[in-house]
Image (cartoon, rainbow, N blue to C red):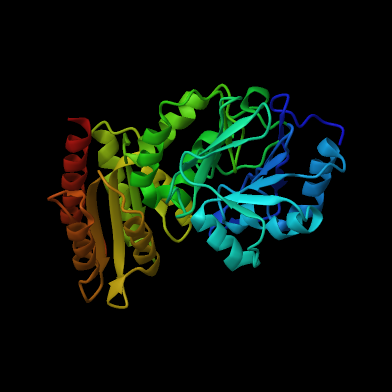
Length: 396
């Protein structure tokens, strides 16, 4: 290796970039790739924190050996067990047979289940410490951010938080790995998308974790995805805090399905009236074109949500049904919700959307729009009423 891996004198970045994978978890697009971050602490004892996707193991091992040569690794600390981070555990154990694996009770159970490893493991509890020499590590259990075993490791010596998936984002690292040495522009929207796609359901757990960590002096956040955060720590924490409280910006996301363009005309009419009423942040998604990843990102970002669907086989348009399911799974809160629908001979879509609205916990607009076959002036009038009600609530 000819480039620096140092974050500080004793802490090294040994993560890898994946620019080949098209879909994260088989669902979420990766236009900028993704990083799998791992960290090596060199002290009297050597500790490796998390591993990487097994597809990158040989390169990963080269990076480790370029720092410690043939020295043994004493500890492998596992903050999170998803296979993109734990996938190299068994391979690391093969190369370092005396390495002691450090994790909490849930972690060690998963290591046995995934990799069949039960020996030479050290179980830690919330608040336990591990001394490497000058580096003193302390463990904080943060369950359901976003798996039950998740924990964070804090270097008391370096004021450095190894946070697992928390504070992570999509996007490979281009050249540098610390935010002070790279252009971070792409990562902010990718952080919202990552949160909404991966962590979104677990806002309460994120809030518990933030409360637990709030008194710690933190100079570095070392997540398992995305840059090492140094100068943008307050911004990163603020984004996760806001999203986990389901706080929003003023704006409206219009999500619609359309087969022949008629339902889309209704969506366009609603958007036009929202703009006339002074709403500037309007995002429109045709569910047949927009990936759900980006739809969810915008839903987590803006307060207003309007969903429209044609009737399809006596139910909702399939892709609308799918996005409503994803919204429900994430238990999205604090939204103003409106809906519209269309049909040719059997009125079903609006009834189904009302059922979703009634069970959503959202503030639901009184006005809705139903169109038979194609738009009429009466339909456009209803569109203006719905949009005006949404604008009034957003801008009041």
